[in-house]
Structure formats: C-alpha cells, structure tokens
Image (cartoon, rainbow, N blue to C red; front, side, top):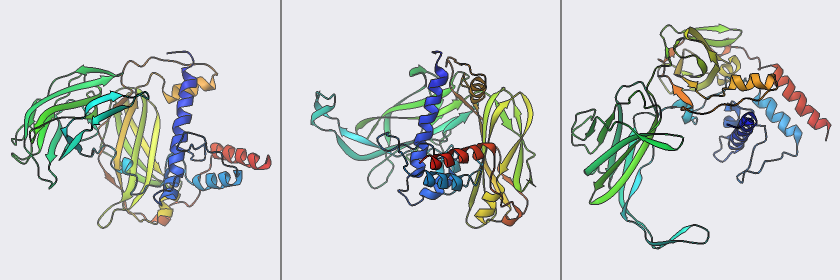
Length: 402
C-alpha cells in the first residue's frame, strides 16, 4: 500500500462517522432522539445529507446542547432499545425472498448513458424463493446449515428439481471454489429437519482454508422455471479465543460491572460487546450496551463490561438483569486502531498490505443473569472525561467566535 495509508484510513473513518451521524440525526420514524442517544459515536460531528453534502449547522449553541445531551453517558455504554435489531440479533440472518423469472428480458440494448433498455421487459412469476443461513457467521469446522424454500402466492412450499449447488469463498474480489455441500435435499437427513416439507437443507462443512466471506449458490428448477439463487455468511474456521464460565457481577463506583472470563489463543486487537436487558418473566426491557476493545496477549483474561449507572437508573428497570449477546472478534487488519493511535502520537506514517480477511469471530458467550438490583442502586452521575471537557470547550469557542 502507499505510504499515505494513514491519511486514507483517517478519511475513511471521518466519512463513516459522518454517515452514522446523518442517519442518527434523522427522525423519519419518530425514534430519532433515542437513536441519537444510543449512538456510540458523537453524532454532532459533521453529519452529511442524502447527496453526500456536509450539513453545516448555523447555530453552534444547538450543536453544544445536543452534544451535552448525548454526552450524559460514555461512548462505551449507551442506552439500548428494541429498534436496535443489529445489536439485539447481531448474527441472525433473515433475508427477503427473491422473485423467480417467468421469462427474461429480451431485445435489450445499451443506451448512451450505459443503461440497458429492453423491448420486452422481464416478467416475474408469482413464485418467490428464500435462502437462509443459520447465522451470519460460522466459527470452527462444524456443520453449517443453509435452508432454501420456494413458495407460490398462497404461501405453499413447492418442490425443487435439478438441484446443482456450489460453495466458494471470496477474498479481494476473487472467488475460490471449496468443498461442495456434504448433504442437500428435503429427505429428513443430513441436517434436514422434516422430510417432504418443501424446505431444502444444504449442509456445509468448512475446511481450514474457508476463512472470510463464504457463498452457497444453487441452480434449480421450480414450477418448470429455471432459477439461480445464492446467499452468504462469514466463516472463521479456526479458534482465536473462547469465553469461559464463571461470570460475576457487582456495583463499582455506581456502575454495574460484569466480569467475563476469556481465553485468548491468538494475540491481537479485539472488540468485545454485550447487551443488558431485564431478566425473568414478562415483557423484555432493553437497557444498555457495553463495549471493550484493545490489544490482548494469549492466555486467560477477565473482561470487565461496564454498564453505566446513569443509563440503568434512567431506564427505571429493576433487576435481576440478563447480560446477552456476549460476543467478540479479532481485528486482523495489518493496521489496527492501536497501531494508528501510536503512529499519530509519534507523528509517523504507517502502512500494511491486506493479504487475509479483516476479521476473525468467536462463538457467542453464554447469557448471564445478575443478582437482584434496583435501578436507583446505581449512580446518577453523568460521564466526565478529558475528551468531553475538550469537546465542550471547543464548541463554546465556536459560540464565542460568532
């Protein structure tokens, strides 16, 4: 890579933060304020509009007010709500069905603008097919299932014929074939749950080389119509770390701290996340998130997930609480966040070549239920830090310079 990769990485981070800011500041659904408060990133940092044009807020007082509101809680522990499905079901796969063509487009030509125009447009049938991996990730070399079903407009599952499947991985836009499914069909065997129910199961067994974006692609015929469909997931066939039993909870400095043992096998920069919600019967109430990240050496470690006291207190939800979706992944980039931070502190450039997938995933840890607490057992103190003080001072100077 070129020597200015650090600058490029910085620009990418700014763009991503800007995009996050824009979507969090939107209030199309009426949930804009709670999304704003749930953001881990400062959403007052240069949001961008639909056309990618930076939004310039002409009132720095409003920016300051919004930052102060957001900064009640620290970036590593934010409020959690039911609309945050990407965090509540981080590895769940539920993709929409795909329509089956009754007849393809014909007599098509490319216009001066490059767009294809067809005298006879494609005609879709009333059949739709849905292909679903059991999860967004696979860890290890165990069997991994993908289901496929095709339905008519009445929702009845249809029989599939002439099934031909292939599995491949993709890295740097290059497809590499891997082993085919070790089993497929609707016979109640090889991982298929029920024989003859119209749900076809493909059983994939990753090899040691199947690391990264994986794809299953299937050609088949349904209702006399030929159809091709594929789906994807991310495979980590080797072990990098493992969550262990023995989690504990306590109140520390007014905050809920849940310790989770972990055994690190492969050193590197890790990201760990967990959710907090109500435990027991009744309606589930979502409360908070907690994140950790940093460099870890091989060996036994204890993760301390801090759920900010004011987040819990403001929720008004009493315990016991359940810690769920305890998950981790290793940053396999040749330039990790800690390396970038160090290079910036030393005023030097940094670079590296991407030769492997950028992530390695762990299996999700077991849910953990805390002791009985009341929400008012926790601190009502707002988050304070040098980072927050510097940001507020900067925004106040913007007001003074009006």
